[in-house]
Structure formats: structure tokens, C-alpha cells
Length: 121
Image (cartoon, rainbow, N blue to C red):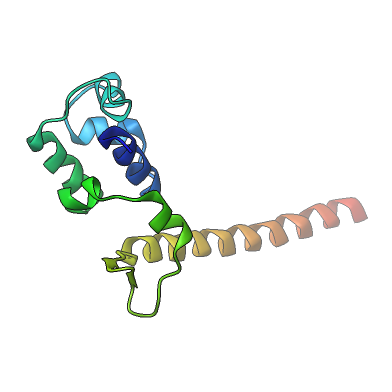
């Protein structure tokens, strides 16, 4: 897997857009897209900035193996085949989504009650 494809997969795992990455790197979205498509050379400095934005090390990008992420179960220690899993940000996002879902469910119940009151009249 080429570096650009690895960067794309890691960006997608973080749920970051190309626009977000381009803005953080102070470049155009088109220019950033070329990195992911391996249409432009990636300097070590640029790769270091990408790693920082993604919250990982440059080595993690270089050694990224998609099958380890998607096909290997991690244990209680958060280690997958020797790779440390950084789940804290994902856990925070999960909690946020759960709160949003709970709020939307409450709003649905409230709106259904209003609709039923109008239907009764």
C-alpha cells in the first residue's frame, strides 16, 4: 500500500475530511488530494505534520496495515498484535453520539405527543 493510500485510510478512520486536512496543512484541498492519490511527493516534514494532525507517529503511517485495523480484535490492554490502539478519541466521539441520539429520541417522543394532540382535536 502506498503512503497516500495509507494517509487516506488513517484520515477516514479519524472521520476527518480532505478539507480539514488541507486547512490544517495550510494547502489547497486539491493539493492535499494529490497526496492521497500518490500524485505528488510527500516530504518528511509534510508527513510529520500529517502524523501530528492524525495524532499518531510517522512510523504508524509507514507501517499502517489495514487488515490489522479491521480484522484483528483488540484485548483489554488496548494492544493489537503489538500495536497500541488509541481509542480515547473514538470513545469520546462515541459518547457524544450516544448523547445526541438520546436527545433526538426525547425530541421524537415530544413531537409525537404534539402530533397526537393535534390529531385528537
